[in-house]
Length: 370
Image 1 (cartoon, rainbow, N blue to C red):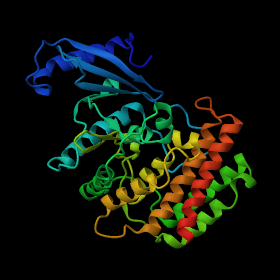
Image 2 (tube, rainbow, N blue to C red; image 1 turned 90 degrees about the vertical axis):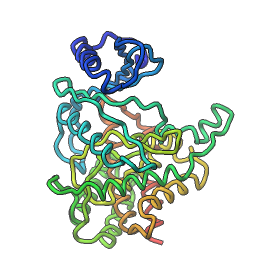
Image 3 (cartoon, one colour; image 1 turned 135 degrees about the horizontal axis):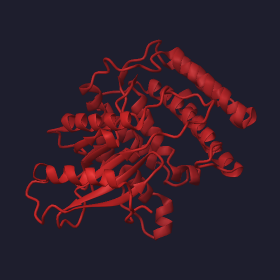
């Protein structure tokens, strides 16, 4: 169980203890209380395990070990934006390199912090990094929801909009600092985006029925054909840029983590992924969009976009077009996951969640078509 002591992998535990003891003075200068290294299971997920590392007499962990697992086979037949599956060892190396790059990027900018990596243990598919005691932005959203207020009978102070602006600022800084040269490109053309939308529409019709899907995918395709240029400008993609992968520190800084700088993607993809992630959290799906007060998410979206493009309009028609692609892709992922053994939704919950996603696509289309 997460948070409880477990036997775990003795070879991995020994390797972590040995490297921490060897580098104790370098990684944790001035630490008192000896060199005892205590490991504790923090979480155990299908794709990774998390272990906290506490050295000496400290009351809180100083380091975190993230141990990757190979991914389970993906459901067959679902169209996906990214092709090819990397091994746990490859993903671990990518994450370590990405954390190093982020730490270098944000150095000297007081809007941002970094999750500092200290070691990579490739034979164990493990990244050892600084332990950060902070909420993620997804945690903040949950605590600011109507659901949390009803459960705890108190309201939570809203997160300052400067924090949300800093998220957009981080993305803009990252895209300026890291050229996409040499990375494989995907969805580089309008035709590739339209082809993916067509494939998604066919998948949804097959598994939900044309009546449940309606005309939103066809409308999205028509809008995308008009809104996107023939060739899209590319940037290095984060891999999973979402509120759950951003820490909000108490001093107002944000720290982005879990990077997998693997693809050159359309410049607006990460911004759209984040904005879609605001509205498609588990809480949003289960509450069918009623978890947050009217206007709350809209204000956050405006702050993120303003942080990304403080001096002008960030090509809003292209943002909406690519947002439609991400939403419809997420819709197919929900339907596909309902057909597997993990996270299977029964017919009723799937129908309701699918209806909410269709409504989100329609909401964005209405804004785009007005």
